[in-house]
Structure formats: structure tokens, C-alpha cells
Amino acid sequence: MPDPTFNGDVQASTFNDYIADVAYDNWFVETAYQQHMRNIGAVDPFTGGKLMEEPFIMGSPVAGAAAPGTNFEIEHVQQLAAMVFPPRLYSSRDMFETFSLQVQNKGPNARIALKDLYYRNSVAAISTNLEVDGYHHGQAAIAGQISDDGTNRVNGMAEALNDGLNNSWDGNRYVNYGSQVRNGAIQSANNSVPVFFGNSDGTAAAISVRALINFLVRQRKFCGGRSPELTITTPNGWAYILSALQTQQQFTEAWDGKFESLPTVPDTQGIAFLGTVIYDDILTPGAAWGEDFPTSYITTSNLTASFTSASTATGVTSPSQLPASTTIQPAETIWSITGRAWKYRPTDDPDFLFGARQNQVYNNNTNDAFIMNLAINLYSMSPRMSGQGYGFNG
Picture 1 (cartoon, one colour):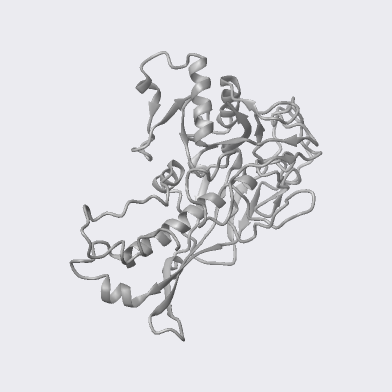
Picture 2 (cartoon, helix red, strand yellow):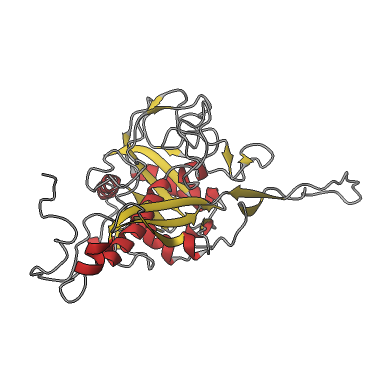
């Protein structure tokens, strides 16, 4: 007999003696990352077109000190370019048995409105998959650069926070971003160097306070001397960081004085450090991803796995600290996010903004196929204002 053994949705929602009219949510998770990006207003509706276009400054006119009376050879230098991203489609699927929904699950004995529950779960399922994919990429596979095909996914942080030379946490390096070639005509304008926290032999290393400071300082350089407001890591990574801070006696006052909540994430506490708040996020890529929550409805895995670094990796003495042509253990990941440097671009068309489609199954007298759709993409207008790191443990 399949489990759970207490029949199905109708039996679990209708008529019997309920202590409270609540179905506890043990399936979906609410994360600090999702809350923050929603509440800072990072949403910019996509009003139509084949591509989403985002201009950026890539250069400047030639300037500098000069002696009076100097003759110059003057020519125009291109100063503006644009990134482009296609809209992507996310769908959830379900089958509605309308007899149970419309005849049985109604009236005072229907303590939980099943159809409403199914709608809300569809929204949550799409949102969860969107966040998981947000740590990956949306590009086609390229031999020697990108090992997997992500063309159905959003253009996530793995490709945004890369420099074309060093591998991201997923083992890929992204020479292009937004159809612009990195390190070419636009030079490093769209680069964000991934940081490897591990050892020179590629193994993961215990996180240190100095390494954490160096990681955050990289983004401060491009954020007007301020740290990205949000930093997220895995639950295990969060514990490792907390232990490192305690060991270095950073917590010299009352513990509550070192825990804070961003105004955008008021109900969740993080570690306040160097102007950022570090949160643990259960969906963040890590060595234990998926052990503590159901993953059967998630199409992409954020479980970290070893990979061989590229020959172009810039080495242990460079900002990336990534050794070239070495087996790398990414272990836990960490992400510093400057919210104003990101955009979520859902369509403004209601049919594809969590829009629902319900169609009768032609040869069944009560079953309806239900599909919910979201057309969206997400990207960074300024990747250097955020950063990714990996390769640490406790």
C-alpha cells in the first residue's frame, strides 16, 4: 500500500474532527533570499519583446593630465554596450479530480479549500525551483567550459558571478554573459571573480575570519565602501562561520547583540558582520543539500560535487585563489548579494504571471489537467557588486 496510509487529499481535508483549520507546510521552505529580493522591489516587469536588454557602461573617454598647448589625436571611444537575456518559462503541473473538489470538498465540512491549497502550492513549487535554478546558469553546453545545458533555466548566479577564467561552484566557467564576451572589448566590466576558500591541493578548508573578511571586502570596492547587505550560505556553512567568529572572539558582548535581521527579512535572524547580515538558506548549494527537505518536485540539484578546475584558473596567489587543472572540492558555498544590482523580470501578462490553465481530459468524466505558468528571467546589471565563494567547511 502506498504511503501516506491515510487515504488522500480529500480524506485529509474534509469532515473529520480537525483540531485546527490549518494544513502545516512541511514541504516548501521560506528563505531569506526570496524574502529579501521580493521586499526590496527587485521586480521589474517585462512588457514584451524577444529579449530583455540591459545597457551598461563599458568604457570612458580618454582623459588625464596634459601640458598646455598639447595637440591630441582625438577619436570616440565606445562607452555603452548592452546585455540581452531571453524570457524563460516555469510551469507546475497537476491533475484535478473535479468531483471531489466541487461535490465533496465544500461547505462547512471542508475545513481546507483544496483547490486554493493546490493553487498556492503551485506558486510555491515554481518559486522554489526558481530559487534553486538561480544558483545555476541559463546557457547552452560548451565543450571545455560548460558541462550541462541550462537553456530552459533563468540566467542565474553561477554565470553572472564569474570572470570567464575561473570555475564557478558548479565546475563551469562562463566566457559570455548576456551575450557579451568577457575580457574582450568590454574588458572586465561584467566580471565577478569567484573565490575558492580551499587548500592549494583542491581540498576544502576550514573557513577563517580573515578569509571571510577578504571575500566581503572584494564587493565593498564596487559598492561605495559598503558591504552587500545580504550574505547567504548553507546551514552547515552558517554554523562553520559562526564557530570561526566565536573562536576569533568576535562575539565579546551579549550574543543577541551580534544577531540582526534585515528590515526586508524581519522574522529571520542572521549574523551581523562587516556591514552585512549572513543568513543560512536551505536551498543554497552545499555538501548536504537536500538531506533535510523533500526534493522530488525540484528539477535541478544544488548538491555540490568535485570537478577539475580549468587550465585558465588564475592560481592560489590570485584573487580567485583557485589552482589550475586540479580536482576541486566545492563543499559549502557563500554568496554576497547587493540587491540593487539584480533584476527579476516577470512578464506583465496575467496568463504567464502565475497564470492558471485548466483543461478537461477528453476521455475522462471528472479529471482536469491543471498547469500554472510563469514567464521570467533574472540577471545582474553589475555582477562585480556581488560575489560567490566555495570550498570551505568547518
